Length: 549
Ligand SMILES: O=c1ccn([C@@H]2O[C@H](COP(=O)(O)OP(=O)(O)O[C@H]3O[C@H](CO)[C@@H](O)[C@H](O)[C@H]3O)[C@@H](O)[C@H]2O)c(=O)[nH]1
Ligand SMILES: [Mn+2]
Image (cartoon, rainbow, N blue to C red; front, side, top):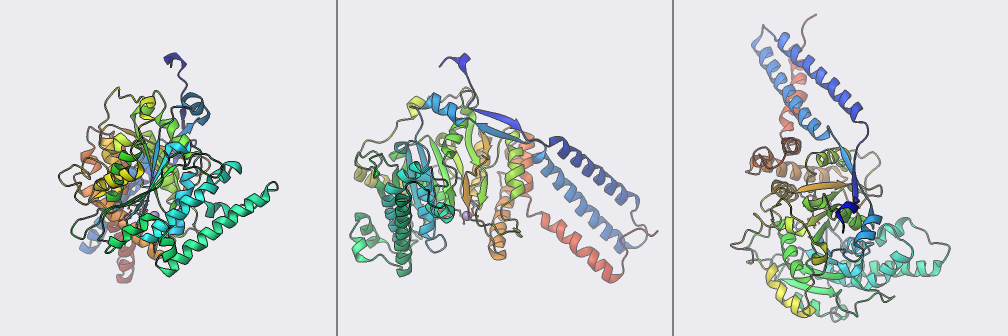
């Protein structure tokens, strides 16, 4: 392609309202100056207790000022990206790369297989050539119930994919779609019959879950069930790998004869004496297994509780990765995460609106958003630990066709070792390669590490949300999640990966500072507790905190 004909595949725009935001920030800064002046000028002279309380308050206030400064860094300059998928289709019609999609699930009781099925079907139905999509489900629950649900999904996809195309279904999760859509005027019979098929499938899955075992007549339907004869428990079993749909097989077609995406079920080996490293461990096993089977240069990671809500998301992300000028330095493209179970007043602020709609756009302007675990497209090489080198260029023609040519059963057997407990021994998996182990927020630390290797990341928030998930909505769920995140972030701050030090000379200072409000989220509790408790105690004791007039 001639260089002079370069037309960008995406544009970067400034978020509106910056001037207003900066005026408000300036006024807050002025307020802070007054507070500091007040604390210094009216320092109590009499009374030892008063003096110490005063100092405590002053320190708490200084902490909040510092925290405000950190958050302001990430909000100062916000940008958003505008991808042009028409240009992408025109330019790369034949060279679109393979996409490997990883869905993680861990427990059939907490994450019901009927939900997992919906997530898997939603990503199978992306508006993208199906022969270039490979979906991998990692089942850390090692459950034959989840495996059975995947068989049902594989079967239903033969109807669902052509249906999505015909009726331009959005969202492509059947549960979410049928919840709100009503039948069209034309071809209502067909529409209703597919809805019925879906409901029957859902009922079959739920009945099996209720039964809590796979009935014999179903067990006979697939060779894969025989694997469970050797499963001792969820924490003690061999690798189970089954290619449920082999996209390379010319017989793997939907009811209209179009090819289907590849669908793979993986339950990596688990043994009580080996640490499994939670989601990071399962992602790393998926990276290795997929590299043998489909080896897509781009990997999408979604949690099983987050379905694809925008069928164009793959193409949107490719507009960024494949842009000739700016694409080659991007390691990952994080999508805004939204939730479809939010309560009206959202009393626990479970959707993290300020983070999602403001701060991540700000981070995007100063080096890139963090990796948030779900709804994120990765460049395989960057995720596998490659450092960014100047003038690194991808030849999309070369990487677009890298599938294995061995038979599915051969692949099933030979890939098992890649997901075994001992495979990672004496390797850099979990340290330099793949997702990093040992942190409660493996996503954040992995994203930071990738950025420190010279890569950029970008943030996408299309008008129609890319992904919709399930947020905690009860107090208990919220406390558990927030505590885990706070712990995880503080752990990052206190580790050798502390952005301020680890990122020195690797990422911009602004980005290092912008990571800190999240890392120091837990540390806020000390100042907050002081400010909340002390004045009340003083009131009870009759200690005056204000200057006498
Ligand atoms: O041993 C495990 C534990 C969890 N998971 C999966 O990891 C995902 C995230 O777990 P969840 O309990 O839903 O955590 P959330 O707090 O909702 O997840 C957010 O925060 C996590 C880090 O704390 C990230 O891993 C997630 O991607 C991010 O969406 C789910 O799909 C799980 O199935 C596994 O695969 N194996
Ligand atoms: Mn979740």
